[in-house]
Length: 206
Ligand SMILES: N[C@@H](CCC(=O)N[C@@H](CS)C(=O)NCC(=O)O)C(=O)O
Image (cartoon, rainbow, N blue to C red; front, side, top):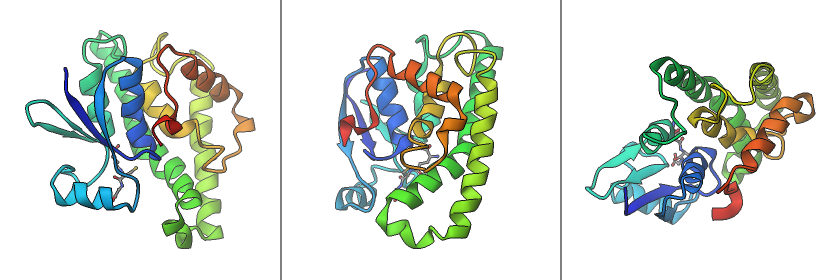
């Protein structure tokens, strides 16, 4: 795979997941940053570069455009150690990736967005923020408990599940306002990911 172009939002965990995997794979790509509410994002939509209307979108050399962070991770991870070999291990990895999209991201990422993006501030009512805090702490507890048995989420080596979950978990405290002191195993897991060769932080492309 050469000549990849990635439309991504620098501040977004969904986009960051893809940038992180590309960095860990040491795979070169052209980055087209489109920040929230920016003219660049409006232009990318108008030009048809985001077929599903969202970032990230990976443009392949033959013109194919891949959307959805999990699908892009799956594509890029094929044939690498980031995807386990057996169908069962792959399914266990995908279970965490679906958990991330269905239950984690709609709470952890949404609370962080309401905290951080000025154009969403009017939605951050005390009631909404309190509900998201309760739901988020419960979701983070599920993750904390899973790490009692293994250093990684799916098997004994890091997989795409770890990258997908890391996207918004590692800033859940700083951006989302979640109380991460309750989750020491998650803190240790974040440190393990940040120590991986080739690791690149969220802000590296800001
Ligand atoms: N499920 C999608 C979510 C994509 C998504 O919601 N992207 C947001 C940023 S996190 C976006 O493109 N926002 C810009 C907009 O809606 O105009 C994925 O994982 O890729």
